[in-house]
Length: 345
Image (cartoon, rainbow, N blue to C red):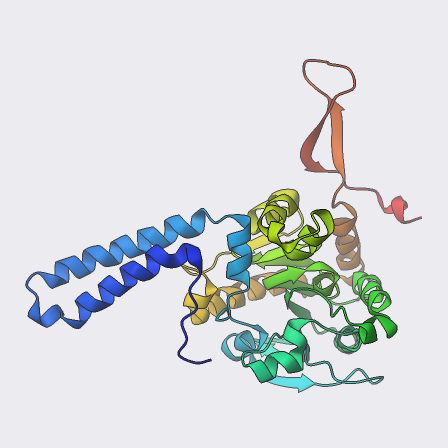
């Protein structure tokens, strides 16, 4: 609801300092030397935000990624894009509101935008299933991608979901098969694709629109094979171990970049994207424009080959003997092996 300030536990020192600063600013005219103290507190506040957010634990990162005030797909459509025209329906079952699709303009580029939407009010969240898409949502997304490819219009995917909808109806209508089909079709879609994880990137629900020529993530978003709660439930039979699971999953932007899962990390405003949505939208727009300039004129064959090799190389590492020569031990290098084109055959 509007007016409610959502406070994360680790942000308590920040809010306390902001309260002191606000109180001092409100009485600045009646307090001698207040301006010097205000200046000092502002510097201290910036230092404190930078320190806290540079040392976030994985579970704290998950909390930031789920922040209710964090910008969503519709916010970026309003702040970064122009002339958005929404396209509805999958031509088979229904219009899944957890995934929004439509044409838009990004400066001089015409693009197809596809993104998860969680909703802001309780009514919107229920309609969007809190960003958990059904098979018809992924079918809608793929249909619009193919429409974009027909006219060589780049596709931009904004990922923000805890996972695909786990209900019986979704399973009956082929949830897993639809996501798998999207992976296959996106891998060979003859137009540039840029994917950005803007909040949560959970499980196959995220991967269903996550195959692209460029995959980026916002600094305090996360991307994982499963949510921390889901992982804890499987391994330890209790969601109480979610913090431990988040640590083990290596789901932060730093880990993902180091492991080669994402190509780029987009810096967030000081204190997270929720503190300055306009600045975050500006940075996202700059990144998208930079990547579009590199991709739009690339020949289709070269584009598809590079996309294939990019995902083919993930998780493949060189191994060799340990320097001391102890038998039976190996070491893993950070450099990934790039398979040849013959690997497809």
